[in-house]
Length: 483
Ligand SMILES: [Zn+2]
Image (spheres, rainbow, N blue to C red):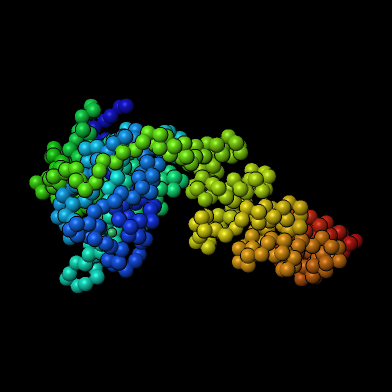
């Protein structure tokens, strides 16, 4: 790699909330949005005498995450106390894993838009509990604390500093999010805090492998925020270096509202967390056979699925990328292929009308009420000529509005294409008598007006006229009139 001066070097710490019903060490609900301080108990409040019990579902999801990212699972890992004082941390410490994490040495590879591979090493993945939440806008001049989130299970994914630009970092995170969603380990909802990102940033001072002083950038809670904040920070460090100054080791906070970086604490204020093994929790022991079982049960990851769509269905790379954008969409497409029979037709319908309907209705594919059977029936109606392509799209919308089958919609709303001669004749004569000037021009040799007449017939018939038949009938009528 030809490293040059000023080149950004970025590593990430990604906190992912695991999708469990209960907290990591107690049976409180993890549901988002409850009234403040209603999902709490002696364990997560740290009351004297309360003892934690590890949630095995959380371990399962953490294992799935680590294995899907190619990590080595350690048979024994240790929960440690990370000690610090903060109002949203009732115990005075956070249970995390420090010297002996659950998993290490993974790798995650992403397809970049330019076709290059972006391969990032995963240094470690460990389990920990979340802290509570300080709320600054509830009472004037006072801070409120909500402890519902205290003790919610997280994994922290720590990468090596392998990312070379803000754009790559964004691409990496987007692919990671999709990967985790496919694994069903987290809902990865950034707005609700289920996926939170901190970044370590430095710029290379020279052209060698030596690294500059890094800063830690916190609170990167949207993809665009990640990219914007990193761009600003890289520029800031480059400016300091080019002016002969030195970058200070500090922790910075991204203020998304103002799109600016603020200093949170300098090195002098940095914490000593006095980590030590939690005496209330035994070591976490993972039987290698269990890890192997989890590994075998992993679903097909999005990147592999995309490749398979290209080879198995002969789809263009781009289409395969769109159709594997979420697991629900990929499932729907494969169901549609089975029902429709033709992968190209299925992908045209899914990428076009189906995604448009989903967007218009602001529905995720996971909540989209159309079945592959219904879609196949619409495609069939179009292919057998019962409805035009345009009306087919309309039928799709009505199926979603009414919950009826496509054939019922066509029948009940009289949408079937009309090739019946008398109905067509009626529409044709209405259109011709309504446009005497155009008829005149057509007779004078302006034959391209034929398309105009057919268009008017389609409009008058609300799309039900069979365009081929309409074309034939209107041409005959004009010839008759001209004779
Ligand atoms: Zn609790």
